Image 1 (tube, rainbow, N blue to C red):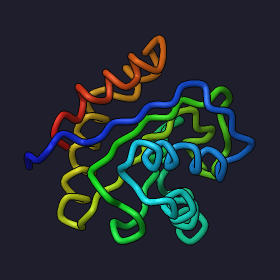
Image 2: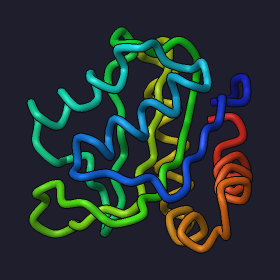
Image 3: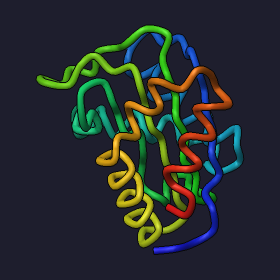
Length: 149
């Protein structure tokens, strides 16, 4: 699937006192970038409250999202690297130090964006993001990984 390039946001060294703060920080980057509405961070927290820590996909990595109708204004992807890892309560993949957030305006694009992120992750995206020396490099690495999510 090819579409417009997503809006990309990056935060490096975010301080979070728990998973809720980490999720809000990651989702807020999409709000600040103009890709998500103001209610999106709370919607992303509700996803975990209602469904558990399934968003913690691999060791140390969470995929923050909510349904398109809960605030997706544009296709947006973001990366948040935490200053200190947080626990989500996942039995195998805690603690989390890296959060990828995404939003889309409609369900079809949502699935395509998720697939693009999954491909990038299976290609080593998390390691490249962890190795990036700062916010600009985080952003560039994510842009290269999902040019047209």
